[in-house]
Amino acid sequence: MRGRRLGRREALLGLSSAWLCTRAADAEDCPAERLEMNLVDIAAARASVTTLTGPFVQERRIGLLSAKVRSTGILTLVRPDSLRWELLPPDEAVYWVVPEGLAYQNRTGRGRVPGVGDKIAGILQDTRIILGGDLGHLRARYSLRGLCSDNHTVVFEAVPRPGQATAAAKIIFSLESDLVSPRNVLIVEGPRDQTELTFGPMQKNTPVDPRKMRAPL
Image (cartoon, rainbow, N blue to C red; front, side, top):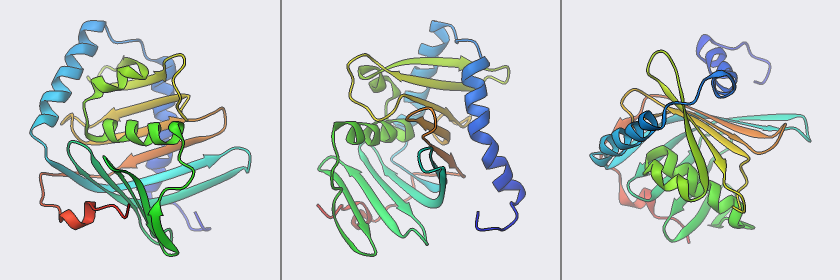
């Protein structure tokens, strides 16, 4: 955090990862009927959404290096299949997940994301689904369960099915009450490696300049 004191919001953001993990560890599975009902309700809520945009905080923890990298950014999602992931200064990088492939642009250049194998490409596509797609499509690669809470919030946990190539050992995520806006996503890659995403208020169905979504492929 560069030596500065944390504000109240940042302190709360820092608790979100622990909250998600605690919910996943301690909460009981939702009944199958409730999980299916939630998936239907989420699909219905997202059906009327054409675009989604808003801020996020990304925190990457790398256990081998004992490092924590914190970034802020703006996501722009054009349903059904285009995601722009922009990291603000000092990172100054943009990533696109589009049907044509994966691409980047930063201060040193632009092009296809190098060295993207099936695992990395898969997790990026899975993240796009979590942010604005049909969650039922995750079942092709993951066992999906819902964790129920007393305030009717559902936290989802996705664990790769045997034989699936993915960089994630587990994905835990939750949505806001509108069933459209993401709240938290925790991508667990190993015992000490994980990426946490915490989202701010999302704007729905606002016009998006097509040029923003055009990846440099």
